[in-house]
Length: 200
Image 1 (spheres, rainbow, N blue to C red):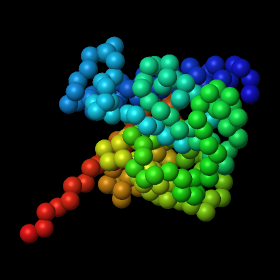
Image 2 (image 1 turned 45 degrees about the vertical axis):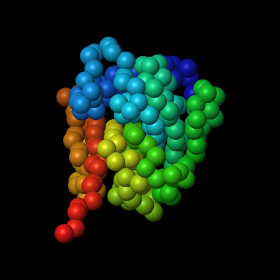
Image 3 (image 1 turned 90 degrees about the horizontal axis):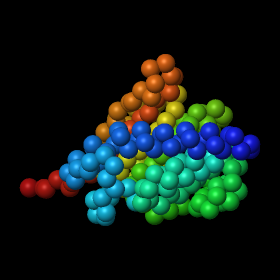
């Protein structure tokens, strides 16, 4: 890895974090509004505490969140289907693991407030896998707390396929264009909170 690649990666994630927060802030903090430039609310109004980065690469998303002053704890996951950047993630002082996403992630269910997957769908579908995209999304659903958020960044056809599957999971989902001439999209989802229906 060349130092220039790390600089570019860090710059890209700084921009991504700014974009994510501008998209999500009106939704997340709608009951507890904050003015631009204000610090994120303290718990219990800070809706992001635990973040799972499913395709951490060099740990750039973690670095950008910390540099932006976000009060979050990030679990960086390096998929077994891609290059092993875990030593780099650990050398930067971040927490990380190596994991095969066709297997259950070893953690307590409903652990994370936000799940981030940048390029994971492309990585997983580029080779023969024994699991489907629905399997992957169901695993995200297991790990995500009710009213938690999912941000998936990938190529437009894969995002459209994932969006169709979110209907089966009953997630609230929308697709966001990053740039008008880009073939990449963001899929932003929220897992709803289901209340038990009273039986008569």
